[in-house]
Length: 162
Image (cartoon, rainbow, N blue to C red; front, side, top):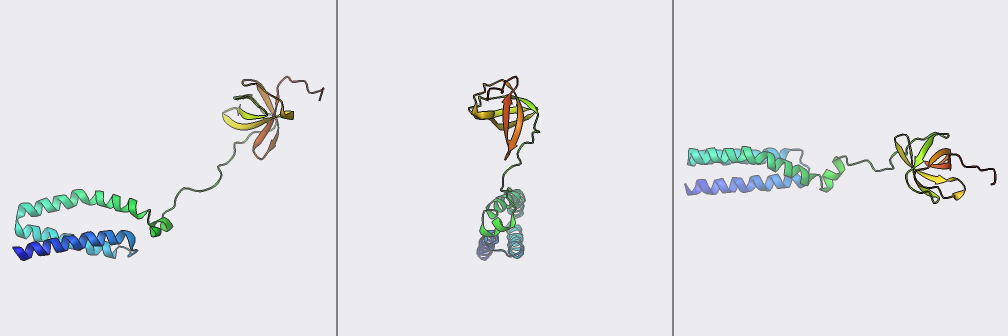
């Protein structure tokens, strides 16, 4: 019985070490297969000692296996090998909203000279024509687009003086 317990704890220790090593060493699953074989040996030795101990060990492995797998994957994604293999979010500038020249909208903030306007269902950054102050809630029309920023004019503004 004493040698069986020694083998049991030795196999369990080897399985744990192999599972941890699999996270950091790219072995393509070879270490996982060896660790799983060690766990099968642990269950067999537990059944050799007592059927209830074997049943408990088998139940523990079946219940804790998926938890260990998910934790291993989340840790693996942060390792140097995992970072190279897992696609993370795309880095780049999101597409700018599309507004046509001549579209009418409403200012959401004061334009002094920059602010936000709403054209239909799109919120965009806007600049007032001639750097004039345009109050929030005024109707505006887009007269130009430069790098995704609309230049707007207040609707009903007389620009004959400029």
